[in-house]
Structures are given as C-alpha cells and as structure tokens.
Image (cartoon, rainbow, N blue to C red; front, side, top):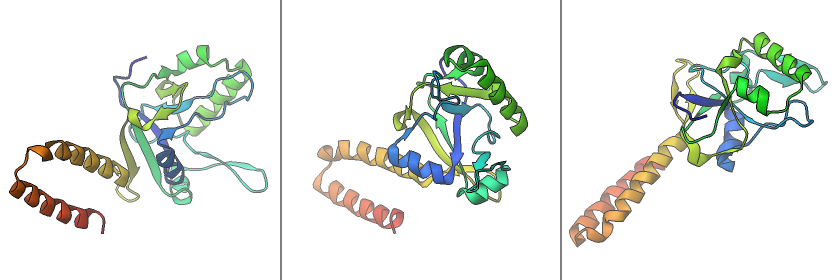
Length: 194
C-alpha cells in the first residue's frame, strides 16, 4: 500500500532516544509469539494514538493502563515520527490477513484498542523495520500547548543537508567568497552548538 496520507509512529521520549540512536524503528515483538509476524505500529491519527505505550507492567507483575498525561510524565514526553510515502504500509484489514495472528489474539487486540479509545481503522503497520531514510519528520509534543514541534535532531538534519549543499559549491567560489563563507559558518556553529 502506498502512503498518500500522513502516517505516524507514536512513541515516548525515552523510546525515541533509542530509535534515534538506532536510526531505525524496529518491529515490535509479535503479539502471540507464535507464527504471527512482528510489525512497526503506526497510525493516521493527527493528535496521538491512544494505544501507544498505554500499557505498563509494574515491578510486582501487575499490568496497568496509563492515560496520555501519565505516559508523558513517566516516559519523558510524547514523540512521533512521520513516515515517508516510500514505506510499505498496510491497513488493519490487510494486517489481519497477512500477519498470521490467531483469531483469539485478534479479538484480544481489538478489545485492547477499544478499551484504549483507539480505532483500528486508523492503524497502519509495516512488516519491516523503518529506517531513518523513510522518516519525514521527528517531533515532540509540547507539554503545555500540545503542539507538535520539531525534535532537535530534525533541525540538525536540515542543517546537515544545507551544509552538504553549500559544500558542493565551494570549489566555484573565489578566495574572498570562501573567506566570507568561513566567517558565516563560524558564527552559525557558535550559535547552533553553544
């Protein structure tokens, strides 16, 4: 399935750090640990996917459901990665046919979605890890306004792309233009990394 719609992988601030370090969104363990295929879970929801990180295992083994605010406070904020159209994504209906999930586990997963306030029709899955090359944006949700803002790594990626473009033109600059460029870059480095 091509991806003309906005599709996001929702995650927590803590988990986002691991994703950024790996430069890849890895598949989650399969739901039933049998023949079922592991997937990367995504959603077309624009605000937050209610099923993301809402289950938490306590040290005593009990499992509790957490609200969005509880997740934000406990997990270092809320993050999301917008998936590029080149990723091969599937709908919930396609997932049910392809994943080899048992009917029993399908009912449990559907009930879980309902209990969380999620809509399975908004879920999308990828049967392979999604590398950073297939990410359009990386964002964190502002804790007060609720707006999604660029994660600092996003700003660095834009800066790196701009610098690669500038570097391609350096051989065609005169000595004075190179000196001026060096001066601008020095100021930019001081601003961005201090």
